[in-house]
Image (tube, rainbow, N blue to C red; front, top):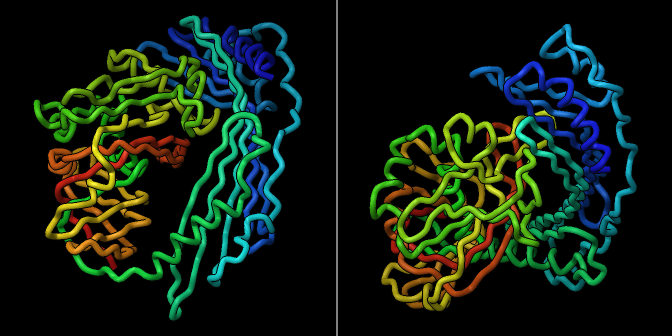
Length: 438
């Protein structure tokens, strides 16, 4: 199928390249299947094919974009120049493939002998994606990928109040016949829901905070990763200027964008502009590295291309986006990071929704799967936790990086485009953050 897509992309390029200074053509055929279950019954099955061609051209200083479904391709040759003729006979659009996907039977999500009354909602997303990219700079590349991602949400009811627990699971490439049963992932979500129902921490606090593996990376992805996307970096906001000052970034911290990981949600052989995925150092030795870029951002701002042009599908322009954000392990005992504070310590197991203002560095995030460790060492679950603060001040309070390591998969939005991103890191401790629990 990728060979057929390459032929179609080349046909489109041949018909447009005489009318523009630069032409990029992206051809895609994607099948996405989502199966949603509730308490052992299939609630909905959604099948979404996405297929077509997206074209981006530069004429002088002007960029233009057009997307076409297969039935619309006949109108492409005259898009830029109505007098232009067709670039030879158009290749046929590839026929449908056979997806290698068998969803989890609805009953297999259920937790046997749970011991706690609960409701369980699950979603399993299968994506088979084939893409091809050609451009007038000589790019000619194609790739195909297969991903299955599961999300489990358990809910328990105590005294009329509902408490949720979440868990995620990811598989890339061919199906693993020896993968663990689905109910093992559901059991983790249920445990988080039970912990949330037992939460006994309320009010506002200022304490040390330890982010667990992957949650620590999620926090840094928001605080630093988005600022180092080429289009955001080029805005030269006060916050970005502050990050570039000597001493603003902890010398102990290294952050990389790595598209080459075998098990990352954001991994790829080529990005959505045909550039090979690689590794870009974002932070190291107390200094900022290179911003991650798309082709358009690199051409507009004079950056070195990094292979980070990503798009939801052929109808959108590729934007500078992270692939997998990675923080290498440190040397400190992760258990020791939780000790030694007269105010207690908050442990954050998962970062939820939120935002950072890239102009000022102010942030606000929800935190999930949290535990407050009291000054005398008791572990008390905390729910509805919110973290607020100033990013530069928070980075200056980083004081420990654990020797553990873990990963997670998230979806991240930008300009109404959602893409999958991997998060991999050890635990990280900050000396003080402001947080509240309801």
